[in-house]
Image (cartoon, rainbow, N blue to C red; front, side):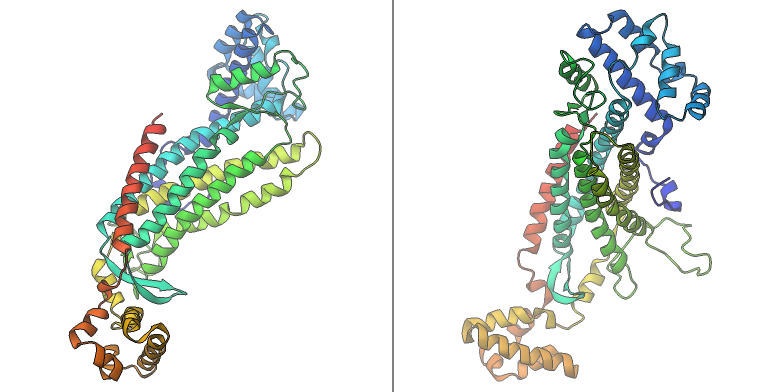
Length: 457
């Protein structure tokens, strides 16, 4: 188990993803590719059609003697040959001699792992769609929910929570687009033989590879070199960027659930225990799992970079590493996405608390608004200097911002008390926050619908 799990992992629907990481699924996929290879080779006359049909009928997990495979594995110390031996034994008559004809171990193993990755990718994309639907609702429902905008960990000027969510939507859509655009480069079948030159079947090798790709719903590798790993790096990098989007949401939730801020809270199930020692504890369980798994995932593409640069036409240390990196990436991404979907679906937004926090500085967060209004009369530079002086006095002496504004002669000469109160009300200075939130909510909804259409199977 390579992802970081906790008790929450046991209660979340993984959408069938974890089943893809089992030995059983791996063997089933190896059988799929051996069968597809035989079928393609028979179509181009390299092996008898009858043999291909018998291989296809034999290539079922229930026909393999897994105990015998394990015994052979211990005896000869090769990771794939024992599988081939029991598959050959499961084939009737002479058809077994055409199993794995003219290719090498890595052709089946790499193609198979990318096939499993493709199946996981489909579910990942559906989860992105579900998260976008959740974010669409959050943005729409909270497009007018006023809260403090924060920069450098301090109050800036007011925003709405819907606007904050719109930034998450924008990044999620970009991640979805990158992942979709990479499919043709990542999910490739490699059937070029020992060094990728189709030496054992030069006349038909490219056609066979193309046909195998078509049979399994993947793309053929233009140069089927075992030394090419950048497509795997690209996918892991895309997963890291997606994880970063989830991580950002989780960090925001993690910090704003603090009692001192209390602007949002995770969905809470009655009976959940937060601590073995502190009865009052209610911890952000979804967020912490996203944060931990995302941080681990970030390291994987960098590790792969070193191995992708290994020399020559093949290197088992590189195969071993990339097999582990891809598997770990899928497991980590699973835990991140299923948690993020539940978090965005069940998140509780405390609107009153957000407004309360926006008013904590008693209008000081709107100093820019007052300055811009004053600039219309005095010019920007003079207005900025004047407002800076008042803002610093307010902060240093703990006085009321409103009172300091009223006492200032240039401001009093240009604005009524009612106008001053209007200018320092947080909800009156949110710019296009609500408009952007509404626009991104709609875009998230539309993108989710397209994802549903494109990844229905």
